[in-house]
Image (cartoon, rainbow, N blue to C red; front, side, top):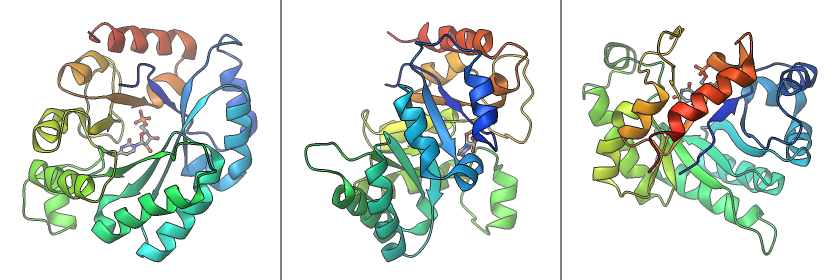
Amino acid sequence: MIERPIIALDFSSKAEIETFLNKFPKNESLFVKVGMEIFYQEGPAIVHWLKEAGHDIFLDLKLHDIPNTVQRSMTGLAKMGVSITTVQAAGGSEMMQRAKQGLIDGTPAGKNPPQVIAVTQLTSTSQEQMQKEQLIQATLEESVLHYAKQAQEAGLDGVVCSAWEAQKIHDTTSENFMCLTPGIRPKGSDAGDQKRVVTPSKARTIGSNAIVVGRPIILADDPYKSYQNIKTDWEETIQ
Ligand SMILES: O=c1ccn([C@@H]2O[C@H](COP(=O)(O)O)[C@@H](O)[C@H]2O)c(=O)[nH]1
């Protein structure tokens, strides 16, 4: 269980992140997501800077390429000391296994490799869209469960999914297989491009192990207040 909501730092410059983080108390250690928007602008330096400031990092680059390329890329990423990384489950079992191996190979002696989890179906994908555009004739839930099982068999630590699928994923894999869930929206907030949305408290109740929240915090008038409200809603359901 990751007790702090993971804040998606979906900004395009370090300066914007600095302005955002200045709205939080100085000593508050956060769990933040570094995604492709900021990573493609600032590179590994942004990860090192956030780590030095005392934050934990979910590096969400969703690797999806041939197994050799993914393995070698993960060997490099492992040196950054992040907590969690991602691949796309659609890349296949061999790619997922070699992602894990790459992380093990690149981790300095005496340290734990980052956890690696697989994106199943994006939370912005609906069943209709999946069937029409990906030509997958299964239901969305069947597709997500299939990818989760494959990820577990490949030795991964969990999946990215909607909280709506979390309990069934635990039933199909195991209770300690991580379901990290974006698509989180507090009551009344705008879903935007997300299709499978859940409130923080509901997400925990139905099996989520970690929530990722971007716009409801980063676009809020008072980001720290929004973060605290979401954290309280999420924590209240933690036993
Ligand atoms: O299926 C997925 C995988 C990743 N994400 C990421 O989570 C955040 C969500 O941001 P919001 O602003 O809260 O919608 C974002 O960084 C995505 O890249 C996802 O939403 N769904």
